[in-house]
Image 1 (tube, rainbow, N blue to C red):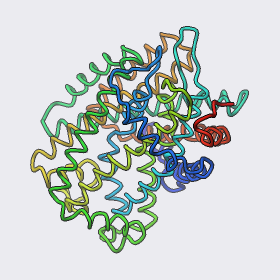
Image 2: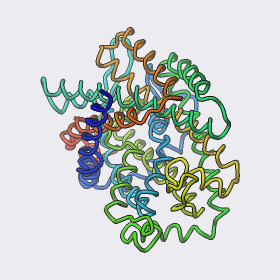
Image 3: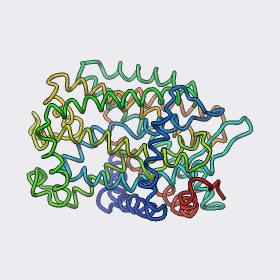
Image 4: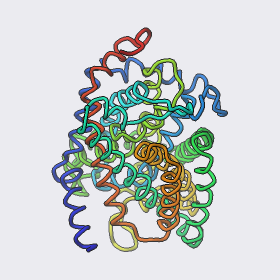
Length: 463
């Protein structure tokens, strides 16, 4: 049975992500389309987005409504989900498979993805709902029903809700805890089972506090983890300062002529640089995937477009800042293209650890482990919240359904820390890809609404 499931999952992922590249073209194409329709809102309103994020940061949830979030809390929860193991291991894998040029295509995908996520956040705000208890809820499930009426809309919304709950709430969180378990076992020798129990216990405390506690944790955790990783990365990069300019040259040259740089030694082509760069970039910043709108819907803002410009900054921070830091650490260290003890080319977490070890010595492993703890743990919190939002919508807010969801999620988190989860990771990729389709179809169907909000940010109040 497992062999059959593995074959089915592999076949679906080949269509979505690998050979046919359906999602790559759909996600990138949507980004280009929304950039044109919004008159490149990611450029016009970038300064406004930065002002809203960094001009008035408050780490106490000021301005949040009942069961809602402040604008910064919503962004922090979104970034908590966006900045995960993919920013370390995923970036390293893209470099190993696509060469330095993959980073250029990551930047391209993120640039266009900023307009897509603007649209998602605007629609999440416009179509959010408030129940009889004053609790705010929102996300793709609501704007999918607005885009497609009747049974079609209900089916697509239900399909999305099930897919994201499986992809992120259960399977995705299992592989996140697995990353923490592996990193801490390698760096400190701590038994993976112990790590799993501790992670699950801390998560249970946070989850039981509901939206307010999740928001309170992410608004404090995200700035700390981002600053810690960025500072550590800057130190490593500065220690190899003589290689900074060659690193940037390799990125730009490798994007169009991989044979001229290290990518040539790895047998990388322009197609592979584009494929791995765009795919890993979109998977990391989650633009168009329908996950972060759950957080942005809860933000208490005056107009939907106010949160739209804030959402753009989440993609910028994830890709242009955090992910770029990882890339520069690896490229300036000179470890790209080297082999490990097993004779295989270094990739993923092992490549990132080798890069930091080059600058920090033995502390490199510990630094990566600590950062993976921050990144993966914050992602678990964000993904759990996204899954819970859809469980509440599917079961009309019934407490029993939320309790069952929480228990299953915690079991997956605990077990994931010490189990081999290759099939689970592949299944997470599959459901992650499947949930993109109804989300993007709805966002594209409602592109006229997004364009109207983007046209007049100061006066438009909706239609």
